[in-house]
Image 1 (cartoon, helix red, strand yellow):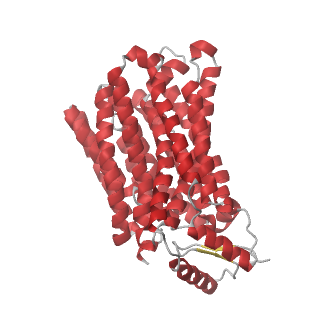
Image 2 (cartoon, helix red, strand yellow):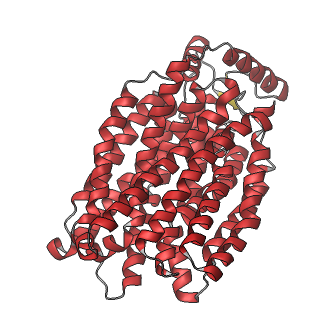
Image 3 (cartoon, helix red, strand yellow):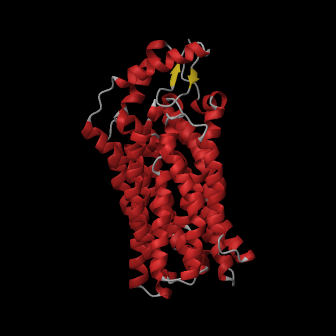
Length: 464
């Protein structure tokens, strides 16, 4: 039997049992492009795919969002310390520990998605995510069971992180492989738009909870309400994903490999061995994809309260309005990338973040009004959307179908683990110990500089 050789190059990237020389690579790429162009895309099935993939991704981000929004209350219940800042840092460290499990989830679930199919992997990830949310929702406080309480929170976060590790690669592969060739950017952008939807839902729930209940009631029990709501969403997402068909690209690839007698080796080992440049470029792109949302969207409500003295209601309202802009701008950016090219839009988004975040943060510090907070948060979300709305399609086009889920999951989740998950804890520590109020801006600017270097190495399959 032939050994599988990987030749990457956008959506034309192929997996073929052929010689890996330059001429053979070009031949195999051309062959797969023609074959994929013959796939007939069912518009109704494609819309169902967008809804199902986005629902699961929204659940993931909703769980992460409400944890960050209620981190102060979780810290009070599960991490005993007289200093409230230390409690908050401990709560954020538990938040970050979930990201330690993300690379493992990326390795196992990403590889599983390339072997068993996108549908099977996405169904498994949403079940694991729901289990992690359940643990957090029902965990007794430290006063009731002692050290077992924070351990339950950590276990819940680890389960959530493990499942999230396989979500981004599997969901993006699922979307782009269901999308018509001319709409891959638009379809994939819904993955990040669903982040905005979940953030809106999280901020809306947080706004209602903080408006209806007293601080003591929230600290005692009402902080659990958002997690219980997340549990109610999970069965809907599971049902939608189980009802979907496998992607036509994956089925066609399976048929081709079977007909050619190609042995399907471990996708994870293949992508590490044969796509190191693609993994490096994907990591560089994902640095900003991870740092910007976690620093300027997830962390901002806490930053606004702890550092700038805004009320919880003001911070959550600004987050809610800002994420409405993110939803619209994500889809706009993805759609424009189908016309202007992925690299053009990625550079635009990265430059916006590089030059725009610091002045906006300075303005917020100087003005210090609710109106300014809403405007700045909205602009942050819009600028981030110009980048992250394009990133899923761009990253998916680096890797061939046979290892797409593994490659995306590994490159993205490595960046998220290092620069995303611990960002709230790191930024809280920097702000608390140094008094540097612009830490989030500097963090994102550094990530934008790295991303601009990585973008220059990306193939722009959307324009070929």
